[in-house]
Length: 488
Image (cartoon, rainbow, N blue to C red):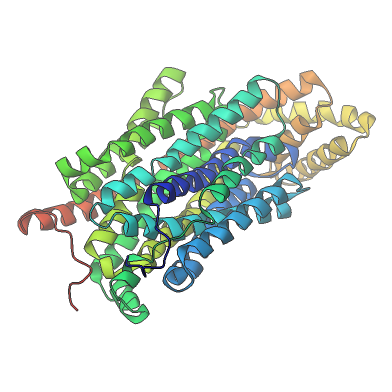
């Protein structure tokens, strides 16, 4: 982190603050996209799987930008990456706000996610460079502002609903507020070099450390699973619980508020348990919490299960980054970028869409055939008489269900749920819409909870992985931080 005498001073406190605000932008994006998923599903008549792809794009786009740009932090600088992030957040939010269908919603979510990935690609090595002797604790404190931003964005979205502002476009617009703030705070500030550049680590050495170290491969595999356990369910919590009549956005706020508080106090916890011990405990607790969340139905028990889940997942992401930075320091920005890439790509391309697919499949089993057929038959003449665009879309969806029902003798999936969503979106008749919501809501809630349950076995695998690492550390005399100069 050396500088020439003529270089302006690096203001570590301002850079750390700006990095935290940039992370708030990424988490507000996460919260608001999650908060509008049910609205998008109804307005654009999307399946759970399509919504899963939109939610997933907001994750795997992060992975793409991490994979491409994290190795460049040494060469083009961390400030350049943050400038690209700023542009991505602006363009992505505006694209979603102006979207007219699935494609632009997907594209906007993807661009936002690429901005999110650029923030992590720049700020993780920046924090490690600013605080080389306290990486795990400072990375936990930096990552306070991912759940902290989810709390801010979630409460803002809930407040807008409370005062009658229900347009999802306004909620997506919340992303622009922290984006403009971090742009003002740090995009003109002098930055330090990365820790690897300061230590004279070449690009080749960084790649060798990242790809030729067995521990790195273990951590990448574990990262795919920890990210799935944390971010997969978090992405679906608002929509799933809201379908069951519970204020899902408030549960998401509660989960992330607890995560923020616990990460802020990470220093005490990390020193008491050691990073690998903390990861082992987190795997156990998160599995118990997620399993409970998949069974609860009352508001009180849902919040209780969410509390256990939050305590389990709160340390996963930053502690995983801290272990890689401390145990494989010569992997540098590339190692941290690979961790984020694998985590977000797994959630975006596999976990989130598959959770949506599971939710669609199991929700369909809870649709009552006779009541659904009767409702759709009653709705057809009303929709024909309305003539609006939404009514025509709903009528086409209902006719498609009729064709499938007459051919197979069973309600087709996922067309039936889509027809109910289209009927709700048409808003042609309060009684018909109310009956459709009464049929679809419990089914979507059930399917979503089953999708939570499908993620739980990953926690068992993580217990085995982190258990081995913890026992190995204990047998070697305790957790050790490696020097970046080792091996030179």
